[in-house]
Length: 304
Ligand SMILES: Nc1nc2c(ncn2[C@@H]2O[C@H](COP(=O)(O)OP(=O)(O)OP(=O)(O)O)[C@@H](O)[C@H]2O)c(=O)[nH]1
Picture: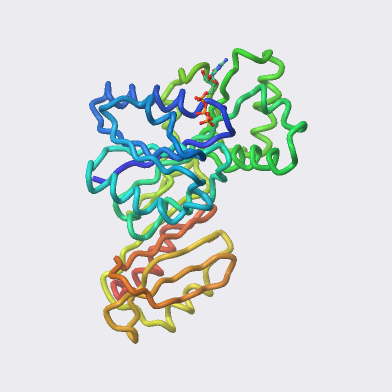
């Protein structure tokens, strides 16, 4: 069984920990084992102290998982997975995190086959959203990007705004992200079934989920791959593939897989010193997963 992964993001003070505590309580009631990866910008984790003893928690301090300590996330996720085999991992990001960067960091090929990346939950503090034009432009843009790239947006602190303001917030968020599931929430109280009814972001297997636009797709090669064919395949990928990364064993490079990176149409290969699983991960908008699977299986010598 794969471990489900949810990313909880949202601007500073938007209510992430408040929601997380509610979600953990629900998981406990459902008899599921939950783990948390908590990212805080400071050197001391205040929020993880609130979580109680029955949840496995790992702190990532002194940096943001979407930039300065991005590489640590795969180690932290692997450690949580290996030590606890949780049913679900929640990642609480710092308020400064960009959701797509966090998604990128969480989809390391080293752990991709073990995780089912369910989605991004973004919290939007309604009062703050209404006043976002007073923020510096970079902060406002981040707040809007957080709403734009989420699967579920929980509108928090609805008790502090008028119903007209709430309607305006909803309309503005829908105009940025028409596929989002919007949920109103007061002090973390939310209908979890509606919230999580939207499908799954990761497709390490062979089934297609609807609703979500940005998805991840992981594939593990069984065989060595012909390099020229692989490069040709990469060149033929549609623009909907935003990012790809992984380790590939080529027919001309022996047993050590090469690190492969692809972003904005440019592939990059590098020999890798360590033993790594031959897994590639794709991130994209409306990925045609059947087509991708066919292409990868052909490269893997499984179909002709
Ligand atoms: N009025 C009101 N306050 C809320 C609500 N949800 C959370 N809060 C309060 O907002 C404050 C921040 O909540 P947190 O859950 O710590 O927010 P956070 O996003 O984890 O904060 P950071 O980790 O600092 O970014 C706390 O004092 C909460 O009690 C709500 O729905 N209404």
